[in-house]
Image (cartoon, rainbow, N blue to C red; front, side, top):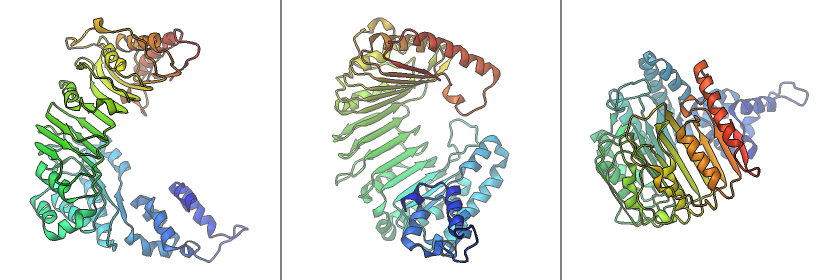
Amino acid sequence: MTNFCNLCIDDFVFCFIKMEKGDQGKEDSRDRISELTDEILFIILSFLTLKEVANICFLSRRLKILWPHIVALNFDASNTLGELRRNGRLRKKKRTWYINWVNHVLESHKGSTLNEFRVCFDLDWTCRHDIDSWFCFAISKRVRKLELDFEEVAEETWPPGLRSYSLTKSCFNFIRAPQGLSCIGLLDSLCLRFVKVSGEVLEHFLLHCPLLEKLVVEWSKNLVTLNVASSSPLRLRYLEIRSCLALQNLEISAPNLQSFLYYGQKVALHIENASLLTDVLIGGNLDDEPAFAFCPLSGYLCQLKTLTLEMSAYNMTFPNFPELTNLRHLAVSAYGGYDDDLLVLTSLIDASPSLNKLSLELNIWRSSTYNHAHNTSNVSGKPIPSLKVVEVIGFRGFKIDVDFLAYLLEHGKVMEKITINCCHPSWAGQILEFETIKERERARKHALQLKSKSPSTTEFVVI
């Protein structure tokens, strides 16, 4: 059974076709797959997407009978979304195809419960009648993991989500009615991306879903205030709020919360009763100052093990940090010009005596159009006692990254490995233009110059 779970779909099909042949390669008239128990077949089906299930049903009559009872409905259409990104004119045709596909599967489904229901496609408010029916279907099946992701990949307007689907009043009324209330009690994960949803709706889920451990809300234009709390202790372990541009107030009281991710503009943030919090992401857009979040988090910084920052280099200013005693991994995704300064990060590194790993992702422009919000006069030059691993993606060989890496090489006392990837994050996986290749080669040259200054005991890798 374990072997089946580790197979990709092509290997899976090949394996069972081979099972239906004898030792000499002759056809075996028996349906060998149908000899497996329902339990094993359901486990196999649970590891496959719906497209993959459709592709293997020809192998066995039992599979054709069992698949309408599967408990995971993941309507993955990654390849089609890729087509839409390249050619937005296909949107209407592909939307019709996707909606018909989901509706057909739901009409055929015979199971009484669902472990997972996921729809992810370029859909908006014009598809609301179908989406409403999908939402109510999933809830009525006592779904455990519910994900609605309607990013309009073929839309070029800013900000995104102007035409997003809005969770309708009829859907809200359904989950407030006795039948809906009895069905949402098993929900343990709720992810809403490009879905307009109010704080009232989210707080209803928090109040009536005692098993809810994960909540993700992204690009919701209707979210203004959110109180993540409950009269009974929340089981919530993971909370992610991203790019909710209307959000003004966020209050959190979650004794089991371990991961908190916030990306967006400055809000009134209040955090209490979060004694298990160990993983935090704070980020903001180019003109935002995400450092506002550090004051509400000040009582929990000493217990963090992972801290991720996504922000602009020009406004990367920090308060005086208490010692981050337990911080092991610092990840920074920075936007900036070649003459901006990352040495401001040294104050954070100095406050992290147990820091073991530093990950840096750089999106560097040719020049900064902003006045610097800081200077290097406050760089302490203290030894960095525990840092062993440094990973950099997007190294360009400009002042912003060369100065910072030179500082780490000079003051890092136990550095074991430095990996520098000269590929800009936005180039990853793409065929590079000639000019882009030349820029990458220039960056590699600067990286190799840094390598010559590194200790002989440090493994220095340039990609």
